[in-house]
Image 1 (cartoon, chains in turn green, purple):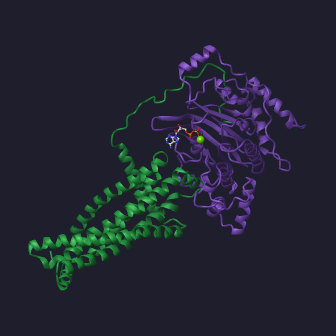
Image 2 (cartoon, protein in one colour; image 1 turned 135 degrees about the horizontal axis):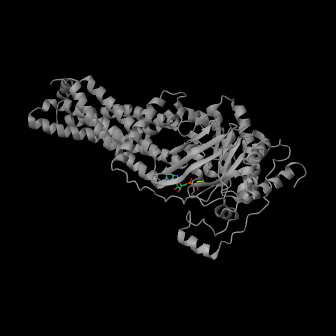
Image 3 (tube, helix red, strand yellow; image 1 turned 30 degrees about the horizontal axis):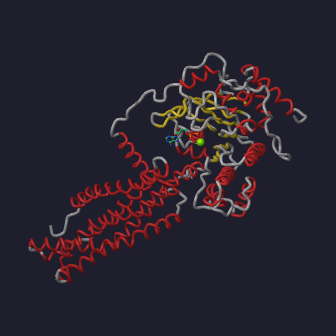
Length: 282
Length: 326
Ligand SMILES: Nc1ncnc2c1ncn2[C@@H]1O[C@H](COP(=O)(O)OP(=O)(O)O)[C@@H](O)[C@H]1O
Ligand SMILES: [Mg+2]
């Protein structure tokens, strides 16, 4: 038996217990943020790795896909019509000032497909789907369900997070297609019916300015934004601070953090795309 | 036979708060050990560290060659299949009914047929007295039932190490006695190493082979049950007699001033009993616990280190084990 038998009451009293905070270390400001970022990256890497681990959770993926799609489709469609209209109006009047009315159609379509659509999709996925995912994981965490899973040798990342992140990515792609179409249609309606442009000019400017890679970058952005929304929601859900109130805070933070990251990543992606792919008519 | 669990120099803190430090003990294979301690002394944290859910800053926990603190995550996941952990609040999956909850580990880790799964699950359900409730969701049953369902789930893969977090809390005294008997019967049947965390005095007095106590961020003592039950250490005495006077206060520990004042008045703690309550025997019809023989050899080997009172209690306890009932 290797356990020490400390016989109580024998010999002199051992040294007094050390004070609660023997070394009151003050954390260096900024280390907290760095650590969180590191943990977020680690979760992202683990999620990517576990995507290829068997058994793949198909049922969970389908359920989550339906769930995220069902809470985002209607708001996405409703938001994209006025959004397409606003862009058409704004670009239309700007083009008019510059004397380039004939390019209104193409310009507003580009703005919708490349910028507005992926962002609308991501904001909706983060706001409607991501917040629900975060709340669900957070309450499982405080009920110790996730710990129980780990104890039974089942990885919560592989089992719960991979299907959720894949679901947000897939929904982002499909929804992006939807929003692009609806937004373009909305733009067409405003340009042709409200601003009295001609359908012919709208369509020809379209083919003069737009090209297929514009659609690709749109979908690539949507996939990446969907991934970010899913990972951030999962990360905040896995680390709620102290009880049910912490879950509420985590949901809140997950939406805010996702928005910040999205706009940042959008700038980078847009800059890279415009550098790498020669634009038509330039 | 159960697996030995060796804990060496374990220290865990959250931020600047040290929960406990330098905890060293060995859970002997196949024996039942109890860890006592007032609320908030980190008993749950200790269990979670043993199974690798929390990562202590220093020390190691060796289970069959795997260090549950520092080994690669893959090895730890593999080693966890040896464990069954009963959580303090059951930790059942809220979206699954009790049957599916208990069947979860079987469906994850075995390729058994559904009929076979049904047989095993219902056997466990009956064992913990939940027959008839297996179709209910965790939200529809009482805390005590959730807890027993959690125990059934922990048992379904025939673990070699069983960890129980306060099996008694939320149970009435009768059910607590049943759970005590259930744990001993379980040990007789599968000879698993068991660690039970509790502050229930009945369980402490009648169930374990070994006992330890956490207090003031330290492991106060760990050894054969007689060692603590006969100890005159004020902390242990106060806890085991459930008195108000002594070093344990309402908040985790009393401040120096209160303690000094009480010291002047003199502690009114009763002295330790010379004879301890007999340990529970397995229910009739079950095989004898193999751990009893192994423990006897172990205790005799450390005879010289034991205080006189402990030796007396051990000797008294050996008598009924050799023949006539006590
Ligand atoms: N995840 C955590 N983060 C910070 N502190 C924690 C955490 N878990 C437990 N603690 C702290 O550790 C101490 C011991 O907790 P616990 O193990 O639950 O006590 P016990 O089970 O003995 O009643 C408490 O002071 C608690 O506040
Ligand atoms: Mg506890």
